[in-house]
Length: 205
Image (tube, rainbow, N blue to C red; front, side, top):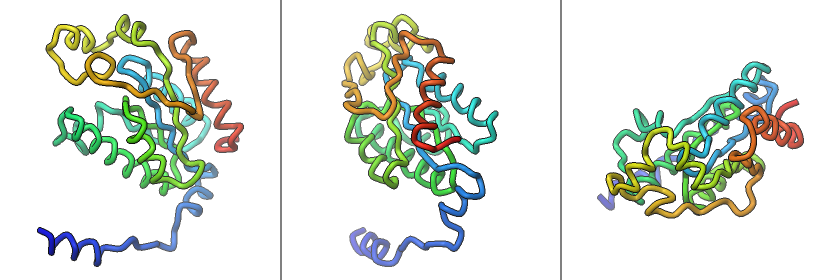
């Protein structure tokens, strides 16, 4: 095992191809970026990310939305919901988002990603300015009222363990690039808030 690992580390190197991220971004006439939507279950991450992607795509931008449930059907189907598996889930998504940014895309990632260290791990994978943390700031009370999948009810009944916000901590972002007060605003307003930041940072025109 040790010999195999050492051989892999020494012999596997990153190959820089002639068509690079800058060229791909120029073709798409946009700046690659990863918009990392984080928040409690039921906060509205996927809803806002989906509405934002629709607006961007309709304006001619090249996007891809990575959704927490969807990736567990394939890329992360072998992972459970222990702390270790959840960290690995975020690591894999971070690596995938990095590759998509390298392709010149605007990537929207909607994951609870409850720990600051995990979100920082993904930020550190990307170039400066390519990771925008989007805090879908919705209170636990509002999320429980919504409970679109009935998960809070199950967690309160003890049918689900390690559920974020109930018996597992959520570490809210301290200085997110975008702070969406999702309990107080409509989806359209939240999307406009995101678009405004993207324009200010010259990611879109």
